[in-house]
Image (cartoon, rainbow, N blue to C red; front, top):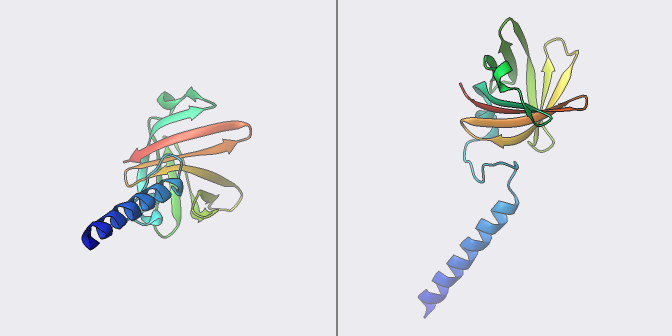
Length: 138
């Protein structure tokens, strides 16, 4: 009887942990659980897989757009003849990334939607335009 109670308690506890972890998910599109630190997941070479601006698809215009984030906080992008460098840092309890260009003249705030080892989804506001990027590991 004691073993049966222990097993029942374990099942209930496991269920509660699963339910509570789903409600505490950091990013709207996942992952639910990832054991790699967020900084290591961001630090990657990314290529654009999908770009939507205010809901309209603009992916075909940015097929050669790439971004690189490093673990030491460096950032760069390359889009044909356009390129730039800067730094990045997490903010707002790891829900956002602040990017500052190399001369600190401008900043962008990326609102993270999904952050996995091979996928990084975010959006940022450009005036009234919402630009949604789905990036894949390069």
